[in-house]
Image (tube, rainbow, N blue to C red):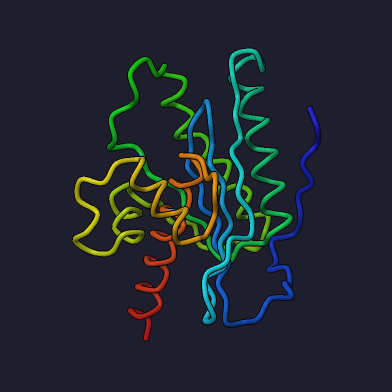
Length: 191
């Protein structure tokens, strides 16, 4: 198993304008994890990175599969240094038909991996974003009711001008929007 480099918990410097907030959105799963990095800037929204990490039983036991997912998330953290992180909270959502208990377990373990890596990269705030909150942030208040995965995919692709986003990436985009909205609300409360 490849080693993960652990760094001191300090905020690394980025060369972006200070008027932007970089957000890592994570759609956890066992068969597929969606990862996106968005810059919310005063001059617009930019898609920095998108990725779908897939695993299957052919990749080995659940621990090996989690290692693969963890290494990809680590790579995204180190390459893009997010200011905050959003993880879709799927604990209240019914699991897909045929999904195993190990898949449900992974939706708990992936957030643990993300939180651990956040500690290694300056401790950016980590928000658990309920699915409906992410969709509300993506579509606007009152407009998310009845939206399904296809609607989320179309809206995320439209906002980012990205062709060929997959469902996991689109869910990660909605999660990033939800995390950014929660971050803005928290900052307003502090004033």
